[in-house]
Length: 169
Ligand code: OFO
Image (tube, rainbow, N blue to C red; front, side, top):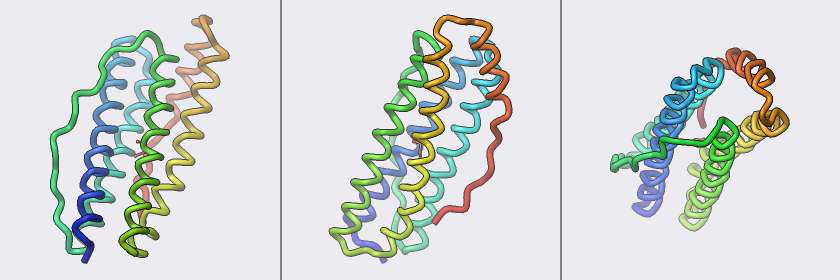
């Protein structure tokens, strides 16, 4: 069993993971509009990852005999000034998510829920990786500046990203 407080904290985070999926889907649509197929692909993978993160917690709450409560998902931003503007937003968002995972772990500590802490370890490591991956694309975009040719080369590179279903927990 999980405590009511832990269950609520997980349900809040499930909502945030679904919001992340929705936000990245909006970014995917933005890149589709620009015909940048590599960036579009990168976001498609990101959308799938966020879905997997949400479902990982969804499954965990059930496994612990808790109740999943789905809540309304906020409308995401749908317009950005440029690809670099998008990736600045992604990094900022991932840093926010990292702070939420830390807060969730604080609740697990308060509730003395060691199983939840061990489960959340995976998410903490995932956040380190996410921030690193996003930071590296952002650094390249900042280097590229207004060079359209270099932007198209990076777009080609981002075609290679593929989704592998994560083993969570
Ligand atoms: Fe779920 O890690 Fe990104 O937001």
